[in-house]
Length: 280
Image (cartoon, helix red, strand yellow):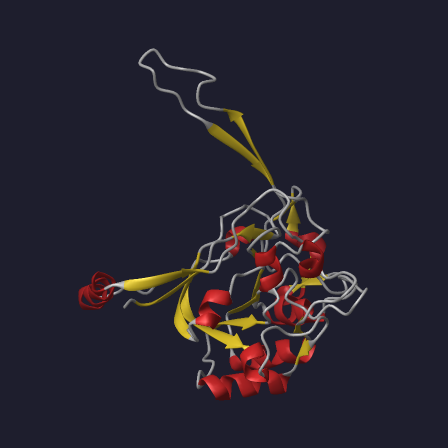
């Protein structure tokens, strides 16, 4: 484990004291929010409300219960999430990864917290549009042009966030368009995913439910980018991100912070990722 020197720690603390701006890249979890139909929906209830039980001193407490799939809302895919021909990342047989009904190998509990350089790749801005068309596949050329336009070269270990503008449908409450089963959803295909791998990214994310380019009417029939990223190269995928504030303020480079829940053996985890920049 690498330890920080006292000087380095003081430098980090000085930067915080000087003021930072934190941009929330996560979506608020609400009952009925847009999500992939392949996963259990989010549900929230209050089994105890204020006043249901009042203590002798007049105080009361409320509490909650939630249920949800781990791939609902803003979330990260563990490497156990997708297999190809019976194999997970590292050529691990799916049966060998499963212990007692949980993915002991490559489960969400194995994802280390991230404090890394983050880069926003604002593809619509590069193409001169507000939002990519439904079913548009983000190409290698699109990604290369975006890096060049922004002057934000991707470095090994970075987290690359690919904006399509599709999150605007989430903001407007247009669930059908956001899910895009009939229309399709823009996203990264196999070639774009391999390009990101070649840049050495640790993780990549997007503002859609599946990261992938989803053709009209196809739904999640095939997931080639998941295969390239998760199975073949061990690159984490973060989905349903809110990237609009970063794009609006042209914040293309930042400190990226993300910590998954240590859900033992799970195939993913809800997250609330943050982008941290110097505050003004």
